Image 1 (cartoon, rainbow, N blue to C red):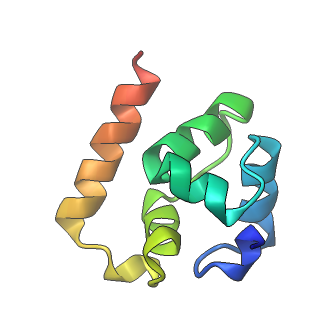
Image 2: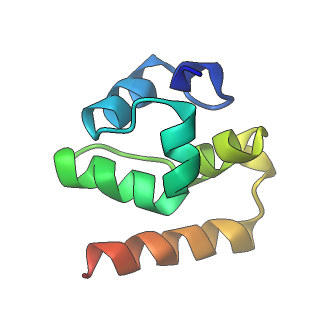
Length: 84
């Protein structure tokens, strides 16, 4: 399934994910939101990846349905990956 078929993922985010080697929904599901965002960051550090949008895409829900606590946890996971 194309990434842009997932909720929250438009053409620009799909392009960023593909540039990071995440070419389909299965690859995104395998990585999870934080690792996928980290892969995009490694390829394009200037890109802004919304972790909640990726997590929502994985869950099949809009990004604003991700709780503040879950967003904080995702950000912590992402920051931990960046510090490795």
